[in-house]
Image (cartoon, rainbow over all chains, first blue to last red; front, side):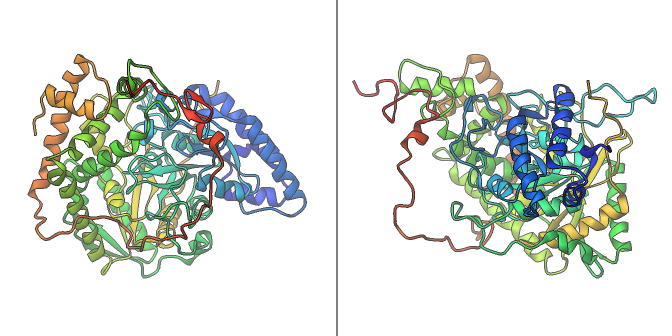
Length: 498
Length: 95
C-alpha cells in the first residue's frame, strides 16, 4: 500500500469516500509515524492513540453507512492551546501542570462535529509566546528541514520550526498529521508555516471563536490551520470557523465554502506591493522571492500596484506594548488556587509569588513584567494609549490601501529557519522575526503564508498575502495561483525516523 | 526608559512573581532595552487620533439576562490543587 501519511487532506478525504482505505488504517499510519519520529522532532507533547482509534472506528461505521460528515475520519493534530475535554491541556507551560479541561474549545468541537480524528496535542511556545518553539516547558521542536552542509550532505544543525505553532508546522511538514490547528497573535501561524514549507492562514479577527483557547492577547489572538496545501487550508478553515455565542467578538457572518472558490482564478485581481516592507538589510534572496511572487501573480492575470503603508515600522514596537499588556492581564488568572501548579508560601501573597515564579518560564515572565510596567500608574497613557493610537493609524493605512488593491503581497519572514539557540539569548532579535506578520494582527486582517521557494541553504521560504476583512476567499484564490506556479515543498527525507 | 533594579522589583511585586537577585539584575538590562526600543513610537504624530478599542466594527451583542449555565461545582473545582466541599482552599488570609 502507498504511504497514506503523504496524502493531502483533500486526497485522504476522497480516498475514504471511495473506500480505498479506512479511517482506522489512515489513523494507524499516522500513529506509527508519530511513534517513529516524535522522539527526535518533539512535535507532539501528548499523543492520544486510543482516543484517535475510537474516533476512527466511529468514522468508519459512518463511512460504511454512507453517512459521512465533511471531515469524516481525517486525523489532525491539535495545538496544546485548545482546551480538549478530559485531555491534558497545558499551553506548554509548567503552571497548568496536569490541567484537564471539563469543556471543549469551540474550534475543536467544530472539527469533531465535522467528523475529524484527534491524534494528539501539539507542542508550542509557552502560552504561544515565541517565534522558535524554544520556550515550551516540554522542550524545543525540531524542524524536519535541514540545511545543506558544506560537504554537500545535510547539516546536523537542528533548525527551529518557527513559533509559536512550531509543533503544528513540524507535524504537518513531517507527515505526522494531515493538518493541524494553530493560533496567531503576531505571526504564530504564518512564520512557522514559512519555515517548514507549509501553508498557514490566520483569518480575520472574529472569524474563529476564541472560546476555550488559552488566552495570550485577546484583541490579537486568532485560530487558524496549518496544512500541506492551499486547498487543505481552505477545507480546514471552513470547519474551524463559526459564529459563537460564547465569544462576543466572534462575527455573525456566514462561513463561505472556501474550497469551492479556489477554481475561480485571479484574472483582474489588484495586488499591492508595499514599499515599506523593503526593510533595511533585507537579504537578496528574500527580495528575489518577492519579485518571483509578483511575476507569478501577474502571469495568472493579476495587476500589480505600488502602495504605501506608512506606519509599518511602528507596528512591531506598538505590538510589544499591546500584547504584553494584555498578556499580563490574562495571565493574572494563574494563581495556584483554581487550577494548575501550587507552590505553597507562608501566606496567600507568597503562595501566588512562589507559584508564578516556578510555573512561568523566562519569556513569559519577561512579557508579564513589561505588560505590568506599561499598565502601571503614570505610564498607562504614555505607553498603552499611545500604542493603541498607533494601531488606529496602522489600520487606517490598510483601509486606504483597500481603495486601490484587493490583496497585499509581502515576504512572510526576513530570513529562513535559523538554528536552535541562535536567537534565544536576545529577545529583540527574536521579536524581529515577526516584522512582516505583526501588522496583520494589529489591524485584525486575514493573512496567509504560502511556500514559494528554497533558500540558498536549501530550506523553505514563504510569501505572505494580506486581505480585506472577511475576504479569506480571495486570499486563498491568490495563494492557489502562487502554489500552482511554485509547486509544493515536501521534506526530502524522513531522517528523523528511528 | 531606563529601569533600575528597584523598579524591576516593584513591578515583579505588582505582578506577583518572586524574582531572585540574579534575575532582577538580568531583567534590568532586558526591560530597559525593550522599553528604549518601543520609545520610537514617540516619533508618530497621534494628535487627534482615537486609540483603537476593537479591530472589527461590530456592535457588542447582548443576551437575555437569564440563568443558562450552572450546577457544575464539581467541574469548577475539579482541577484545583486543593479543594474541599466545592471550596478552593487557600492559606489563612484573615488573622
